[in-house]
Length: 186
Image (tube, rainbow, N blue to C red):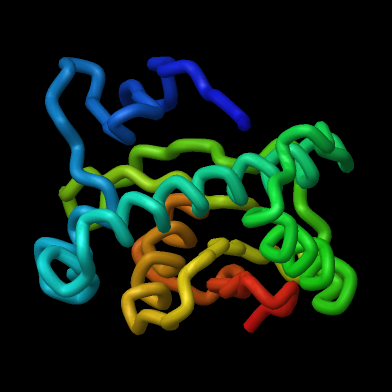
């Protein structure tokens, strides 16, 4: 099993703590994440709809698959001991996506937290991976859930705005890639 230690890292505009996934500005003031904003607006809301056990299992599985994808995008390989029977089909789906979609991850832009400001409001994002498809910059958000969510379009839009420090989308392709337990993707 893959274990990650809790770390607080300095990022432009403040700090990021990987557990509990928290952004703070230079003065230590809490900054909401794009995921929290989507939840607060009702665009993405699971509380009470899905049991706590199912949510915790999905979060654990998603974190494990993200760690595999991170290592593969960053270094071109993974420690085989990190792969479990449960995570293997999701990881195979990720590798299949890379091959078939023609997406090339930029190893310097994998899981990099960002604090952005849009019309005076600060928010935090951590795009899963930024890279290219041909000549087009591309933002990829990986998902390991069975049901696609409309909020993913807003999530990747918030990521694009942060990456390019702009107030309009259209500078990059944005994909939410749903990795399935069948070894396939959508």
